[in-house]
Length: 224
Image (cartoon, rainbow, N blue to C red):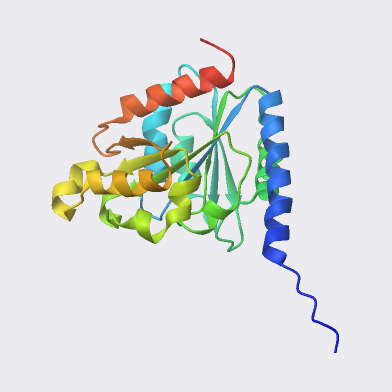
């Protein structure tokens, strides 16, 4: 009996996605725009984080936001009140954005004339970590109520991200959240990870995060 041929489909899918992500990245760089992939669990504070950052950066950069969700346009309407360009992307039940979906979103959005584009990814700590979208910067949010053990449970998200935003830091005493332990666990997986404790409710820590983003965008655009 001939041996059964086995095809590893996941590896092929991820390889195709990586190629498409590279094309997205080159496209954005050709336009002088920076694409940020913002990831996190439902309720972690992705949209409220965007509102805090937009308020600090919109006078310096032309900002666009792509809101991805399985349904509804609640987040797009919320962000739209800031005056920045926004589009809602529906995934029809899929748990993440991939590179081709992002490409179609960028084309429908019309990214010309933008300096900084945020993609608010679907809310979970698993699937978005596996699929590159072509972002220049991957930021993830760990909210205090989720617990400081999440780097142990979802290591890939912390491994692939460039920035860990620890949101709702003002509630740490209530939830017995150990910031040092969370940072130690995350940085053991990814020593280059930049960490920013913030509170989207009070605004604590967002000046530092905005400063980091400002420097990142200017560096990518070849500015001082």
